[in-house]
Image (cartoon, helix red, strand yellow):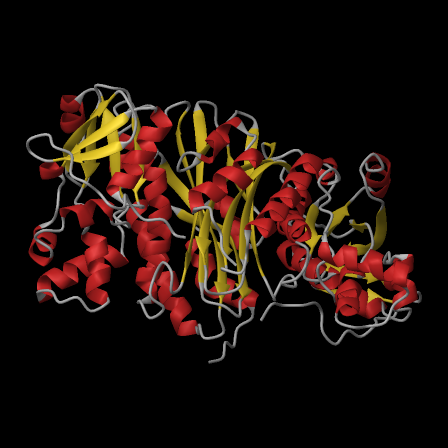
Length: 319
Length: 319
């Protein structure tokens, strides 16, 4: 495979059209420049994806692009931040050709249009290893309103957006597990293309006492809120939202669903469940009350009679 | 090689102590939060380094860390920005052990202390490929004062900081070229540890009409200024500053010096050469006048009698 364009040529052809923000300077400078304004905070996050680890090397390039951007936008959303743009550091193996890059840029463009953001800067290098995509996403919130992990208080209710466990099932299907065709398509899409809750996130400001995005697994991530807030989190197993497709694919897989990763939903706590449910329906996704915050520490899953369901492995770590 | 700590454990042990900025939230949240203020612009840049491409896999971990941070700080400096902090996305092969990480964190810490900045956030994942380090550096300038590539005008003078060509000679020596011992040590250090001109950069605001950091090679990078500004740049070969070590190692290597990469000096243009030389000595590095800006396009190297010196290859591209 050969690339006929230089690094500069590649940037000009495929990435410059994505740099719609004036401060990106059409990617012709060493840095981007973003005006500050009194009354705002800048919120910044970074997440890198590697072929063979975070996506399958032969996944469609558009979906890889949307996933790489999506996991970062998911972090911003969980903090209540509206995205402004992102920087992209791309390490390309020689097997990546221009056709791949064109589709990858298309995927970025689709996400940019869906969520209203701009490419702000980047770096493109060659690598002898697998394709690696490091994205830094930048957003903003009114001063002091970023939703942290550390604000949950005993008495708060616990909510989660969307449905839980779909992505892990999608990966299992890609790896050979049998599934009904329509369910397989839905679950694989949920694995390949996280839908960051960009429009839900900002509505959480002033409502959520703590929030994060569910990437390591629902219980593990609620454990992060519990640890940061110094509280215990009790999740009612029966209330965890699972899609119809997931229930058909894995009827008895509740524990698998709450310990699997890559959901990219938002979990949050709030003292006022009515406000949460009233204020949020305008966003793009349903939310479900799944538990409560108590004094203490740790996270537990309980059945309909309040008995703790044993969990052998709470969540997923990369090592 | 085994790592006994989880991803979370690694972050807590080696990276949390580097997160000195309050807005980094001790790396315990999904994002960092930085207050905005009227009268300032945020300046952001990203650069990734891959083992075997941008550094040698057995380079000392402290030097790799300082280089990875240095190339990003160099971009901020060339824009006149003072650094605030950085985010670090680290893709680690299994061969990287805790001893390596401890030294790598030491290197980051040294640079942080030297230049006054904080780790703000990051992401640590495993990779089956080479070590990849993607850094996004964040700085700030008073509103509207970022120095761009596009402001050079006919009549301006061209300056560069420090000396040119050392890093490429250092790499050649590492690859087996013979050199006197003391010169070898100096030139290899210049290759391994770029010294970003962090304190020079902000003094360029209001003086430089255009600037960038010299990473692709002096002529190639001045060509970027020429292209962005719509001007021609004429460099006087005799005036290009070369170190004594470089002159001994490669007496006839002027063209090699101006077409090699990785200098990480700052090149800039200004209408007022006296102001430039008067205002700048307080910074850490000498500056040298090397040429002039003319109407036209392109970049040329001329000898003492104004004759153009032919260049077969202006600079270095990664592909």
